Image (cartoon, rainbow over the protein chains, first blue to last red):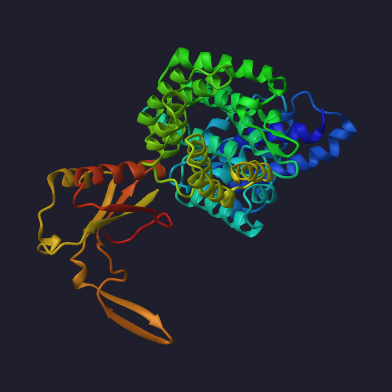
Length: 392
Length: 116
C-alpha cells in the first residue's frame, strides 16, 4: 500500500493515542512526526510492519519518553507523564501492544465549544485529518501565517485552560456531538480544495471515523449518509464547464454504490431515531434522487427541519418545494420573509421563481445579484446563460 | 487546577450592588469546597484606572472598560479541567439570570495562589 496513504490513514489514530499519553497536542505532534519520518526511512527498506499503527505509536512513545528524560523542562509541562514515568520506569512498548483508539477523545477536544468555530475546523483537519497547516490554509483561502497562528492559539488554549481530553458524559453528549457533526459537515460543504486536497472527501473520511466509533449514534450515521448521498452526484454536476441542474444530470454518472451505502446508513439511522436533524436532511437528499420527485414528502420533511433548526437556509429550500407544489408565487412568498441577502443561492433561487412567474425584469436583477456573488466558473456560466435567455 | 470566574453585572442606577445581600442560592455555591475564594466589588463608579502612557502613570476616573456591563465580582474555583469550572459558572449564571450578564472563565497561572 502506498506509504502516503498509510500515513494519512494512520495519522489521527496515532496522534490520538499520543495525546492521551503525553497530555499535550504539540508534544504529541512532534513525537508523531518523528515516528512518521523514521517510518518513511525504514519501511521502504525493511517492509511495512504487520501493525503500522502499533509500530508508529510504539516508536513515537519511546522517542517522546527519551526526549522528555533528556529535557527536564518538557517533563514539567507534562505532569501526567512525569507521574507515569515515576511509576513505570522501564516499560517498553512494541508494536504488538494493543493501543486504545482515542480518536473520539481527540475529536471532542478539537471541537470543544470553548474554541472558536474556525479553530475547531482547522484543528480537526490537522489533528484527525493529518492535513498540513499549508494545506488547510489553502483550502480555506487564508494566508499560511493566519492559519498557523490560529492552530497554535487553539492548542495553547487547550493546554492552558485544560480543555479535557475525554468523551463527554452522557448528559452532555447530544450537544457536544452536534458540535462535532457541525464541524464535519462544514468541512464537507465549505472550502475550495485545490491540489490534492478535496475537503468533501476529508469530510466523508471524518464522517466514516465517527460512524465507526459511534455506531449507535443515529445522527453520526445520518450525517455520513447525507454526505455520501450528496457526494454521489459529483461527477454529474458539471458538464463542459457548465453547471448541470439535478433534473438534467446524467444519472449513469452517479455513484450508485455510494448511494446504496448512504441509503443503508440512513435506514440504520432512522431505525434508531427518526427526528434527528441530519436524519431528516439525509432523507430529503434521498428523496431528491428519485425520479419523479415526491415534492409532497420533500416539503413535509422541510417543514420538520424548519421547526428543528429555525434556519433561514432551510426555509429557502422549503420555498423551492412549496413552489413545486403551489406555484412560484407561493414559493416567493416564503422567500420574501427571509434575510439572506448575502447568500448567493438565495438570489439564484429567487431569480428562478421570478422567471417561472413571468417577472422577467426582477428575475434579471436577481440573476445579476447571484452572478456578483458566484464563486465558481460553472456557476457563473450557468447564471450568465440564464441572463442571456432573459435578454429580449 | 484553579480557575477565576469573572462575574459581569448589568449597569443600572440601583443602589451599590455591594450593599445587596448575597442571594441564598449563590451563597450556597460559594460555601462549597470547590470554591476557594470570592470577592464582591463596589460599583464601577468607585473605580480608578491606572495606566502607563508615554512614560507617565495616568489615573482615570472610572473602570478600564466603560460599558453597560461591569465586573462585579470574582469567584475562584478548584476543578480538574475546564469543563468543571464551566459547570460552576453555568450554575451561577442560571441562579441569577438578570443580575449575571456573563461570566468569563480563565485559568489561574501556577499552582499556588496567595491571599484571598
